Image (cartoon, rainbow, N blue to C red; front, side, top):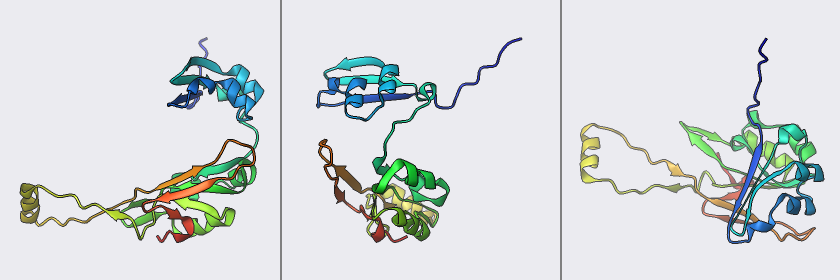
Amino acid sequence: MEHMRIEPEISGVSIVLVGKFNPAIFTPAWFTLHDLLPKSTEEDAQLQVAHQRLTVFSIDWLRSGERPSGRASVFKVPHHGSANAHEDGVWRHMLDPGPFAVLTPWRRGGRVLPSRQDVQRILTYTGHAFTAANAKQANRSRKRQDRLVTRALREAKARLREQPILAGTVRLRRHMNPGSEWKVEVFGPACHLSDFAA
C-alpha cells in the first residue's frame, strides 16, 4: 500500500537580505544574538549564502514547531484593516500593548476599506495606527491621453472617472539599541488612522 504524503501549503520561510549594509553579519547566529530568533531555530536554520552583498538562509518553521518568542512592537494590519481579517489573539498575545500599526487602504466600486467601524476597532487597540493614504487627500491621476484615444472615447460616449491613487508612505525607524523609541514619518497622502475618512 502506498502512503500518501500531504505537503503543507507553507513548508518553510526563506529570509533574503540584500543591501549595502554588509549583510554577511545577518546570519542566523546574529538574529539569535539579538533575541530575534530562539537558539533552537538558529540551530535548525540552513545558511545558503553569507557574502558581503547578500545573505540567504532558510528556516523550516513547521518542522521546528516554534514561532519566535516575545512580542512585536510594529504590526502590518492585514487585509486593509477589514473585520474579517481581525484576530483578537494577535493583539492580545503577539503584540506589545499599544503597538505601531500600519495598513494600506483599499477602494473599489464605491467600497472602501478600512470602514469607519474598522478604524474605530483598530484605534481601540492602539493610538499609534497609520494608513498609507487619507481617503480625502488621495492624489488623482492626471495622465495626458493621446488625441486619437480621447476622440474614440468621446465618439463611443464613454464616461471616464478618475480613480484616486493611494500612494503614500509610512516610515518607522529606530536605533537597534534596546529601549529606543520608534520614530514615525508620513509622506504624501499617508496619515494617522484617526484622520482617515472613508
